[in-house]
Amino acid sequence: MSEKHTPGPWFVTGTGLSRYVEGKVRPGVLQEVAWCGATEVPEQMEANARLIAAAPELLEALQAMVDAHAIPSSICKERPVYEAALAAIRKATAE
Image (tube, rainbow, N blue to C red):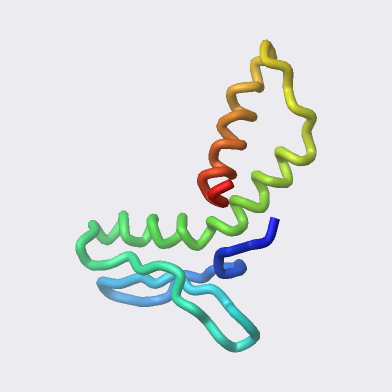
């Protein structure tokens, strides 16, 4: 899979009523990935920014977990979790 998103890691920056999520596009150069702003409750704004910033690592970990395990049979109790993981990967990668 070739990445179409800004490569991770992503970082939360900003103070006060705004949080930005930025990623390095090359050494010393950050690019804004997302903005979480003043229309949100401060705790939600901070939590949303942290969740967005974790997205590249979460996607990578989920892909590694799926790749490391055999596809469970349709009657296996882990099958719904496996299918949910695949659906989340598809949602994140538009595949």
